[in-house]
Amino acid sequence: SKPKTQVLLVAIHKEALGKYNTIVEKAGLIPHFFEIEIFSTIRSFLSRTIAPVIVLDIGSGTSKLYIVEFGVVRVSHTINKGAQDMTFSLSRSTGISVAKAEEVKREYGLVSDASPKAQGVSESLLFTVEYIFSEARRAILKYEKQSGRNISKVVLTGGGSVTRGILEIAKKHFEIETVLADPFSNTQTPAF
Image 1 (spheres, one colour):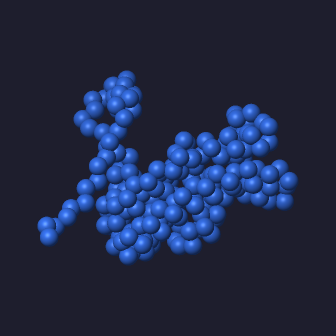
Image 2: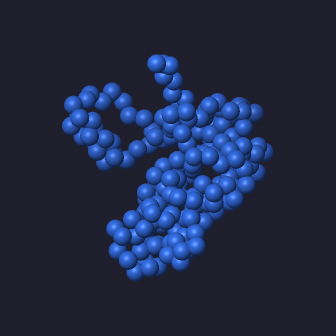
Image 3: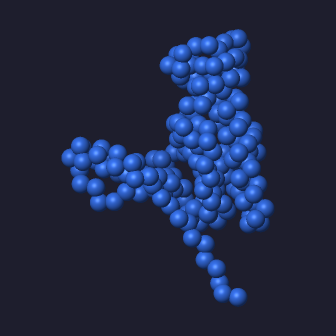
């Protein structure tokens, strides 16, 4: 009969913290504190909306999904695939080097135009993207079932989110409002 409180526990690897300290110190700065990435991400482009919002951070090695409600992280989920996996998949399927695959990925992305090369690139990358989006969809459905609340929007962020064509595929996959994060949307500057 006692009220329950949900607690979000966050942690960072000691090695990662050591790297951040080294970078900051070499820049001649004095670190006062470090912040978990999602909190600064939320502040930079999410407003306090009533309905839950998904932040899908497609990083290099992993993708991180966060469900944010009233500016508070409710769920955190890691997907063990990222933009680097798209590059590896393209490299394996075409037999080109990883460095060349990265160049080709950046040039063509998931846009399958009339050229046969673009079509092959798109198909190779799509496997990884579909995996990331399917895992994200599974986490979304679980949250919606447990909370009884529907997700209102998906916000894509991270280096992998700027892959050509990924936003259009995400819109079709999630079937709700899906946008790229704009970290400067809440920035105000003088008119002059």
